[in-house]
Length: 368
Image 1 (cartoon, one colour):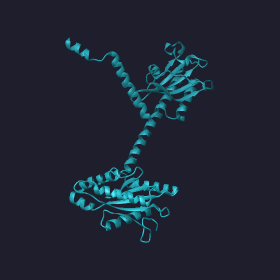
Image 2 (cartoon, rainbow, N blue to C red):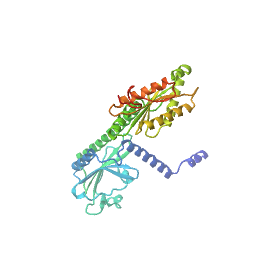
Image 3 (cartoon, rainbow, N blue to C red):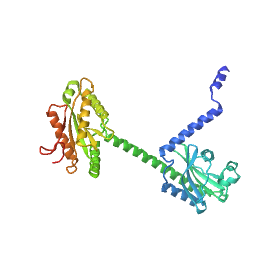
Image 4 (cartoon, helix red, strand yellow):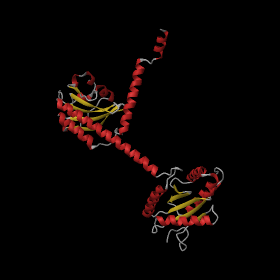
């Protein structure tokens, strides 16, 4: 007997259980609605058409596609005759229709809402457009959550014919088909965005990869050509990295690449763009940056790497710098920087060298 008493004392009160159930129910409902991204979405003809068809087949002046979100009832689509054009219907709160909704596969009908005490305080019954008849086919998610309904209203007391009930349920199923299609498209869009991000990110360092660099350079070239603003580029190579790999092993080399990438990223301005160009090479695109400022950035980057601590030993980098010549195009820009990088390494490494496209070109120019 004492054990039973102790057990009863540990149980929540009935009201608390009810509140907990309600909160869990609401959370599940909102989760379902959020998966469709339907609340507060823009008008869509497919839902408007269903509302129009519902009014037509049921012979009513008003039809609504409603969703129950939070503490409100939100109308996604509405059809009304001219009589109701300038007279919005004041709908009761979500919980009211939530309690009235029928079981899945059934239509709730209220022949005369004027005789139903639950409607006494609502303006549905007031004015020249007061409504009498209400019928609704519920919208249930695949998980069984009531998320809304397809409702029709009329000014006269009546009931729906059997074929009208079937038609209303059919249209409600069409709404759920639209929602499931919407969720599928959202999932595909998210998956494609994630895949696209993966395709543009270097798996080892987590910074943009060569493909992302190609896209960014094309964008910045188009902007520079359109606006006349300068565009510069840094091509960076970690000095003696092969020897480091051979000495300490490829796992250590991978860790070193990650560390260098972090240092390079920390040195950039918000509008600069860093990518892994390949192997131990990195590239930095400097929008709206002339050659003089590009050299300043390059020296800052070089000095920061040289002063940073890395596992096993310090690193230095060599940097080639070039400035875009619009007539020569972006390919000449990278070639000039590559020539500068070659000269920096030939001169003893840990240097910044202004590149040029060929021996006859001005220093730092991509002009042939």
